[in-house]
Image 1: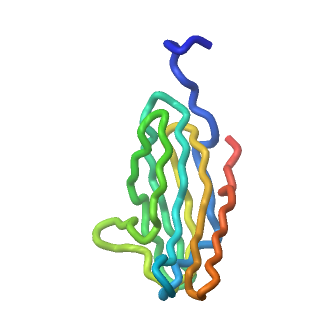
Image 2: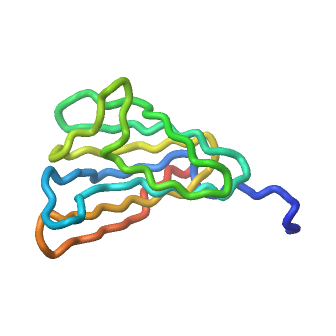
Length: 129
């Protein structure tokens, strides 16, 4: 493939992250947080729609995000919102990430609630189309 040819979109259109939880407290200088890490290998921008599901309330539907072509983006879940509604800290949740083109999705959590920090990173579950 020559450098002038277009780059192919790789991955899946739909991804699931079943275990989300933003710790309500942090210790030390690092803030506990979570991120959806998205890789877009295409020349085309990926238009994302993120739906957040909860145990005891209606979901936050189709939060928009854009990942530019040939880029990666780390979307902090605490900053995601739609119509002023955001994911609350200390509440379990899950997410569905839909994309206009195939992308790769990873999920990371930094838990700094104790002096010994924990970092977890896992691949999201892709829906095979």
